[in-house]
Amino acid sequence: ADEPLILGIETSCDETGVGIVRGHTLLADAVASSVAEHARFGGVVPEVASRAHLEAIVPTMRRALDDAGVTLADIDAIAVTAGPGLAGALLVGVAAAKGYALAAEKPVYGVNHLAAHVAVDTLEHGPLPEPAIALLVSGGHSSLLQVDDLATGVIPLGATIDDAAGEAFDKVARLLGLPFPGGPPIDREARAGDAGAIAFPRGLTAPKDLVAHRFDFSFSGLKTAVARWVEAKQRAGEPVPVADVAASFQEAVCDVLTRKAIDACRDRGIETMVIGGGVAANSRLRAMAEERAAKYGITVRVPRPKLCTDNGAMVAALGSHLVASGVAPSRLDLPADSAMPL
Ligand code: KG4
Ligand code: ZN
Image (tube, rainbow, N blue to C red; front, side, top):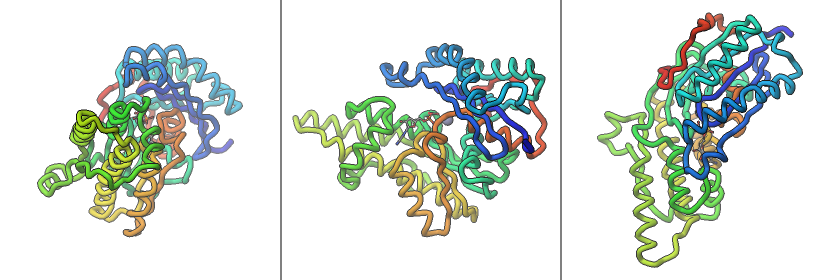
């Protein structure tokens, strides 16, 4: 009972998460997901997500406190995702955090969701060597960040200019008749396929793009290329080789992600790379990043899949770091900001 006990609340998209940490030790990570309710729409429906958060927030809070064996009175500070994310979804978590903070007379920290995705790695691998490069890839975001200081110095280097990487997995899965969310079934199918079967485009890697968009991503052209390729097969009355398409598509995404992340490390002389977000669960991305990074003496840190997807533990991990760094808490009137900058 030396380091402060921090509770984190996450409601930016379709996961209601409440996590509790002490220092870098994870004590509880309760998550309720509304992903099944969005499956038939092929993507997250904001209104459905907000209602689901409202129903899940109190039970998830109770479960986290029970799992950690503590009460609200034991908590030293509450951290909450204040943005970026879906406005109505964020509001549920922010309002809940304020209510609990007010009731328990504890400080509240409104935190950035992307920085929290980076911070969660400390729960698995301990303090993050700074500076580090973070590659965050999920259904809602694809960003390359330079982390000079996790508490106060996370700088965006680039981001997707159209679809997020996870969104591309979801759309391509749909084209191939695979279920939502599409990452896991594509990952599975790809194991039986030939990654070199089809040469799909690598967005924003042409020499001209490397000037204006050196660390940005684009996946919508890749998605269209897959759609055209599949349609041509179908028009010709030929069967679609699902495993080969999945493997070739996945190869194109992982190639661009790892190439740009490693370029960022080399450009800045940085030796640590952290990967987070739901797509970090991808088996090919993990293997390719490690293999390529090793050639340049770069260490790759990827938390276990349960910590990569949205959860409250990541918010608690960042809150814990902010408290330890002496950062002042937010005001009790902190707003939710769907487009919150880093
Ligand atoms: O971080 P996350 O749970 O939620 C947000 O979008 O913020 O990420 C979900 C995304 C989905 O697009 C899903 O298809 C993708 O992560 N994903 C994967 C894998 N597992 C989940 N993408 C590729 N390979 C996977 N194994
Ligand atoms: Zn996320």
